[in-house]
Length: 474
Ligand code: HEC
Image (tube, protein in one colour):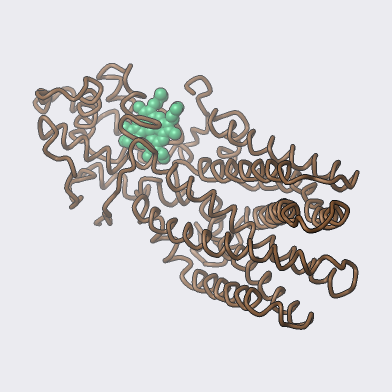
């Protein structure tokens, strides 16, 4: 059995997840705008052609220019950047996603093509077309935009709840997984919210209209915020559909996850209350600044939500199938025999900086097994986290990694690698001195480490039933 190795890039002091997450939240937000925006335009086109609103058509044309500029240009740029960064961080996860859902990616791409072509056609020729043709283009655009969400949502939700797929490896069991529907509906409503809020900003830029007319448009746009009331039951449904341990981390088990979830929930609540009571209930006017602030809160909420979704999947990128560090549970025992980086063909970029081979080996083990979630001295720094531990504590806690924290995978190397890792940690913590003695002759230490690794077992904390989350430690 030979594991696939890929070159891993380093973004220190930023965590790899932060780089992808940071890009991802912009991408997701813009995608939501594109999806909800399509629906909102169909609605305004309908208002225009049925004579319900004389201003709807004016609004449509200025809104669409924004939609095209933001969602097509920036959306496409961030989308490609997502692929580019993901392959530098977790090539094997991306590989698995492509292997399993090959034709669904192709389908999503086809939907995206329809979205771009119909959107561009509307942008270029919409002004000259009759209502009926305008509507056809807009409906085509929105169905395609929502359709691309439909496809991608199945693949993303599969990562957290692959349930049936784990047994039969069937594409459709994976696609229509337990969190598919709640997350699709949740995202659809978030998209409508974003579109409605951006509409309020755009309406405020239409300065040639007087305030009364702008208010009329805002009242129409705020209809898109009404469904927000469903976010609460959908959020609960979503939480019920995800694994119990992930749910527990959101609800107090992990400080960071709980904080992100609380921020996302709080921002959603503020936007929701303002929209439902102020805009819909009282038919208030909303000025550009307030609309922008609400839109920003929606952005924060959506970002927080994405972080939670990604974070609660730890230690997996595909639950029960692939650990975040691109190792499967089935491979752990083998890697413990052969060593995890023995066959890693990629040299260390800073190979000359290490004082000896043992420390160099440890740095390489860190790169392969730990660097996907930690940095050396930046965010979630592995050196700082282990700083207060004595050498035997380091040896034991790392050997029993999944017991130390259930959101870490089991340690997947041999005793020599683990001791290398421990020496590297101590050497880093000591300020990287020029000389450092090797401990490769310490047989008793190796034996002790070996027995701790064996005691830990090769399974994840989830499979071992160690769902308990350490509440003090964080
Ligand atoms: C799937 C992601 C992930 C991987 C892979 C991972 N860790 Fe962690 N680790 C975490 C998270 C999250 C924390 C919690 C940080 C906190 O509590 O602030 C953590 C905590 C720690 C701690 C502190 C534990 C404590 O009880 O205070 C140490 C030490 C550590 N990790 C070392 C490692 C080493 C060494 C490796 C590689 C062999 C590794 N980690 C791999 C995610 C990971």
